[in-house]
Amino acid sequence: MKKIHFSILLVLGLLAGTQSFAQLAVDKGTKFINVGIGVGGYSSAGGIAFGAAADFGVAPNITVGGQVAYRSFNYGYAGFNDKINYLYFAARGSYHFNEILNLSTDKADLYAGIGLGYESVSYSNSIYGGSTFGSGIFVPIHLGGRYFFSEKVGGFAELGTGIAPLLLGITFKL
Image 1 (cartoon, rainbow, N blue to C red):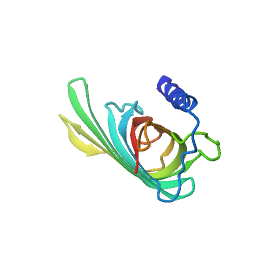
Image 2 (image 1 turned 90 degrees about the vertical axis):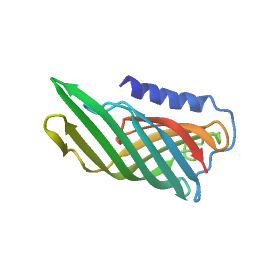
Image 3 (image 1 turned 90 degrees about the horizontal axis):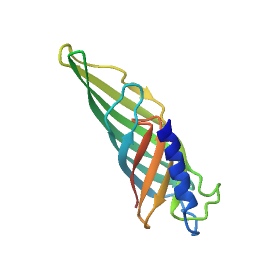
Image 4 (image 1 turned 45 degrees about the vertical axis):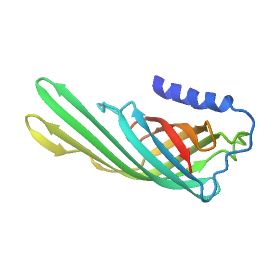
């Protein structure tokens, strides 16, 4: 919970510390690429997730795209040596709130969205072998913010229900 509060404060702090510029326009043809790590985990999920997402502007303030992520970790107890792998794919759409919130900067981008994804969860055990469990289709949601340090490169933070509750990384505007 502390991580989620810190993330929200980080995004708000980045926005409050901006200088006054024109709004960051998200329109048809706008392209963003996010590459980062996922921190935190749901239930017993350990390890660090690695992921990437691409968002493409299709209309004013609306992007669609995809996301892929991977997480693997070992979990040992009572003489067992377990390995759990998560592989995550999702199509997603986002609405960008820059215009509605009247952000006076071209360095910040606030967005939220929903997707349709598939997560494959595989498990292997040193005694019983391997199996697949918990795999299936799901509907992830996300709330994120980007802050651009230059015209094309910045950082992002994204809260959501995908591979990790918090994704942090670098973003590129193409």
